[in-house]
Length: 162
Image (spheres, rainbow, N blue to C red):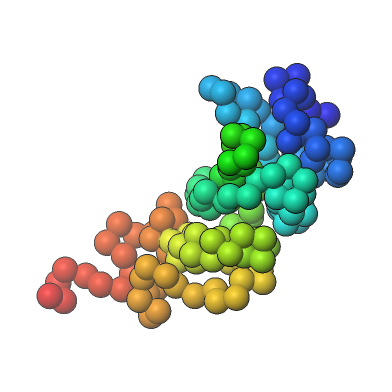
């Protein structure tokens, strides 16, 4: 059941009506709605939001590392309905052992580089992504530098070698 502050949001209501198990948590804070979606439901929820609620634009995909907590990661999606002038933030909690979530590139082709960036910097894999490889760092780079347990000076290079 949605909290009272979110129960008036038509997008949250549409998700809850379509799949009552999809939303784990919901908040309305500072004029913004945030919905925590079960990771296995993210593709279905986004498909619904795009097709039925008019969210034609995926603005961003990013992640947060909550190390040492578990689930370790949150994958964050910012959606925008231009026609309706509405925004919604979706978050999925993903475990740290083998972090993986479904890709949204088939819904929004622009998710391609966002997901590759999250993979490159956090090591979260996106199932079904057409080209899951590094985007910013060299292909032979070791580790993922935005993880909180990544060494400050990195694994690969040291200033002594220069």
